[in-house]
Each structure stands twice: as structure tokens, then as C-alpha cells.
Length: 264
Image (cartoon, rainbow, N blue to C red; front, side):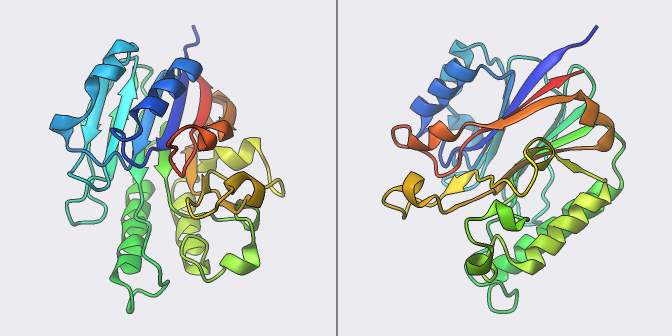
């Protein structure tokens, strides 16, 4: 008997500040699981009540005050919780759980990396690359049946940014980051569901800067948010889409949600 499970991912840029649009999203889309990044809240002050009210009674948080943070929120039980410190500095950037159907689900918030794409001039960029290297080492040792999702803070393809030429030296699209992400992807033969279901050369964005007066008109986006699966799970992935209208909701995140439907 097949079990259908929908998994959403969203960098919410403060779950308490944007609780109204999280509620709107869950009420309208009703995914079984929502992986949030950049929750910016300690575990003890996470806004559990709203999620419980909507039937999301299984919640795993990994948070810290004011910065970073991830949370995996579910209508179905989650077990075997793991939290990896891939930045080796104690920041809350990962949660891994096991689904009732047996697959592992990892929710990750990869560091943005600062503004200068040079580890000598900018330690944050070096931390980002080291984070990716630790994830790559982890990926090489995985068994099958893994899903990983979150804000990867890298737009790998030319069609994943509004201008490949303009952003080649901008952190999130530099060749060194794209190469590091490719090494991570190759380590477990991860399948990028975004580009499996919406192949290049179609443009595909999940983030638009707050700096744009009219983000939709300028459409200077980047695809920073991803969902990948190990190859054995590709047949289980039935659809993948983005929820672009969320970028226009009141007090929006600069990221939008993505949703994948699975049959296990």
C-alpha cells in the first residue's frame, strides 16, 4: 500500500515575525511536513501553538537566539532525530529525522558566506566552503533513501540566476561555490528535484532581494532553495513546484516555499 507524503521547505526569515504567512501557507497548501530555515528563535520560545492548532503535532526544533535555526514540523511522527554541526561552531543549521515510511529527511541551512568570495579576505566564505566539504564527507557514507532540503544559499546553474554574467563574482553563484555544490551532489549521486521536474533552460528562482522596489517586475531572482533525493527515491517523487505568490504576501520572506509530493 502506497503512502503519499508532501514535503515543503521554506526559509522563513524569522518564524515568529512571519507566523501569519506560515499559517496561511499551511492552511492553503496543507503539506504533511514543513521544513523551515532561518527560524531565528530558541527552541523554548518556538511558536508551537499555531502549528498544533493546524494539526502539526510533531515538531523538532534546532534553534538559537536571533540567528539561523531550523525546524521540521509534521502531521506524521518523526523519529531518530539527529543534529549535525557541519560548521563546527555550534550554530543551529541542521535537523535530520526518520519518516514513518523509513526514509531519512534532512533539513539544512547552509551559511550565506558573506559578501567577498575569498576565504582569506572573508572568513565567512571559508566557513561556507568548509560546511559544504563536511556535508560532502557525510554524503559519501550514506545508505540509500535520503531526502535533503533547505536553503543551500547557492544557485548552481546559469538559469538559476537572473544574470549569469552579472553574478559570476557574487557570493551564491561563484564558480568555487558551484563546484563545491557539484562535489556534494556527486558524493551521493543526489538528484536535484527542482531541475528534474523543471529542466533548464527554464529559469527557476526561489529568492528575490528585499532591495528591489518591485521584485516581480525586475525579477532579479536566484534559486537558492533546493530539495534533493538519493537516486533510489527518484521514482517516488511525483511532483515538485514552487509557491511564488508567497513572495507577495504581507510581510513576506525573501524566499518562497517549495513542495514535493512523494508516494512511498
